[in-house]
Amino acid sequence: MCLAIPVQVTELLEGDMARVTLDGVRKTISLALVDDVKPGDYVILHVGYALNKIDPEEAEATLALLAEAGQLQGAGA
Image (cartoon, rainbow, N blue to C red; front, side, top):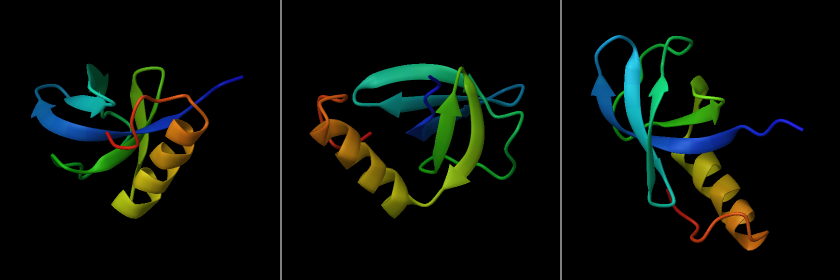
C-alpha cells in the first residue's frame, strides 16, 4: 500500500527542493512535479516528491484524521 500525506512547506531550497514539516519531523523533498509553491503551502508528499498542492483546510482535516487514527502524534504539521 502506498501512502501520500499532506506536509507544510517551511523553506524553499535550490534546485526545485524544499524543506517541509509534519508533526515535528523536518524533511527535504523535491518540488520538481509541482509549480508555484511557497513557504506555508501544503503539498501532498509521496516517496520524497510533492505531487500537488492542497488547500490548508483539506490538509488540516486529513492530518486530524490521521492523528485520530493514531498515525500522528498531533493534528497539525
